Length: 122
Length: 287
Image (cartoon, rainbow over all chains, first blue to last red; front, side, top):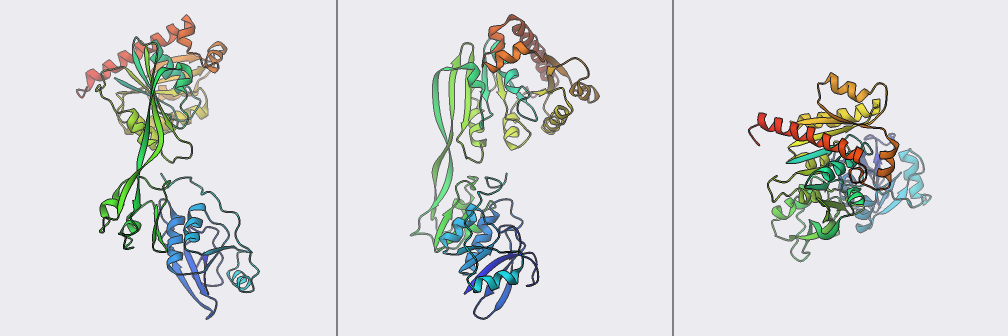
């Protein structure tokens, strides 16, 4: 199963990024082969709608789950349409979260925030 | 003749100044461009109201024609579009209605639908034609409503007062764009100077003739007055910090229609403004 996590840098000992839409990179992790790749987040510098664009990129990777500390409404709408489940991170360690996900200890992200700008960035 | 009244923050006295100047004029138009919270109509209580809905254009895709090429998704700088599970998803509130996606679609799968974002109301209050813009709660931008409000079929022949939104953002720029003169309203505090400077920089950028009305004046030093003197900005008039005026205003009454004292105050302010505008006109052959 393929999963995605927003991360601060392109190595596994780096930290989970606090932002989904504007994270610099995504870790794409294949739980069966333990293979990890890092994806540049082209949405990070967007004027607005970063969450939508980031969610599109994650959906295009055909992941089944996203693990993130938080997620905005628009991004959640895209992820839902793509049948991607959103899980909440337990701490800021990438490896802890991957392990917890595999042993089914992570819970779904219940709280979806309304976005910080309320619009597309004027 | 279009006179815009603006300030760097809310509660400075834009509505007080524009409503009373419009009311004291022989015949005038008052336009409330503060579309997020229009309140001029509370004072004027206009009659014979005509209402017009204002809408913007939002794209929608014909799924049978769309091939999923994503030209539109890649084009949209606001990221209002996503292509998920072989379906185009449109985020209405992120869309800025530029129409670019519709133009670029190679399959002609996109068309536009109207989305109502608010309304414009027109009514009459004695000598004043009152035009109010109202943006629906939750909508992102009031600019399409302001564009409609400021459509001028009389080519500036009427005396028009534009009550601007607070601040110095896009929505204010749209409101003052076609104004012949700008009145900046300022409070007598350091915070007031900061806000005055914001709008002062804006109208300088737009190269608009301008003057300042000092509101809520108390005895002692007025930092906004000091600022005007330092920058050689013309002070058009002073409105005192006055309980009676405050009470009339908080009861949604128009002071010039209630009290001779205020009628005189705003009449002389209007005379000063008229003279200023004429001077500017003489210097600038555009008018």
